[in-house]
Image (cartoon, rainbow, N blue to C red):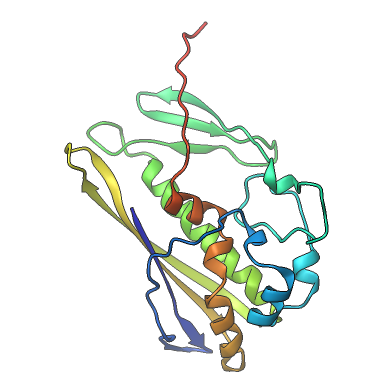
Length: 221
C-alpha cells in the first residue's frame, strides 16, 4: 500500500500551494511515537517549546503520542496501551460498533451493494477516515506547539482500490491532502512541522509498516 501526504497552506482567503506538496514514501527507522525524536533535536528542528518533549499522556489508541522524558527509566503508558472494540451484527452485513468508552457514540458499518445495503460506511472508508484524522491531528498538534495560529484544517483522503496477484481486492493507495488555514506570518512554522508530523501519527505509520493482525474464530454460545 502506498500512502502519500500533501500539505497546502492557505493565506487567509487565498490558497497558495506549499513547497513540495507530495511527500515521498518513507521508511523511517523508528515508528514508536514521539520518542523517535529526542527533546533537543525536536527543539532544534521545529522550534517547538521545550515543554512539548517533556509532556506525556496516556495513549489509549489515539493518533498522537508525546515524547517521554529522556531520563525516565519506566515505560510510558503509550508503550503498553490496549483497548477493545466490540461489534454486533444488526442484519445481513450491517454491524453495530461499540467502543471501550461509554461516552463514545456507537458506529454503524455496512458493505456496499450487492453484498450489503450500503446503509453505512464500510471498513475501507473507516480506515481512510482514521488515517486522515490521525495525520490532521498530528499536524495540528505540532502547529499549536509551535504557537502558530490555525483557524481551521480541511483534509481530503483519496483511496484507490486495486487487485493483488491473486485477484483479491485490496487498498492499493491512500493519498491525503491536508489544508490548514493559517496566517502568512506562520508559513515558516508550517514548513518546520511538515518535516516532522507524519512520523508522529500512530495510525499512518502503523499502516505503512504493516500491522500484526491475529484472528481467532470461536464457536458462539
